[in-house]
Image (cartoon, rainbow, N blue to C red):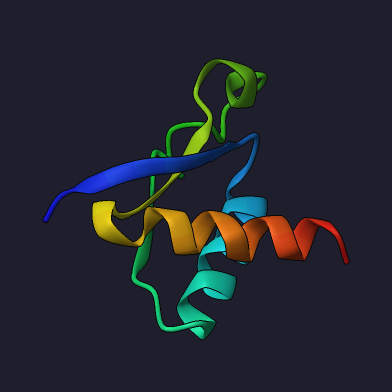
Length: 70
């Protein structure tokens, strides 16, 4: 089982909100590069990536889409 990129965010706060939403639904999610984009303007160059298990990607996408519609 490998991790795949689910989404990219301009800052760590948005990525962590999405990560905790997924974890509240029982899915394991991690963020990559959260510490890399804290410098000036680095958010555009180095987004924070939200990663999930490959076999949980579809479910995770549905959860995030549902959150966007609220």
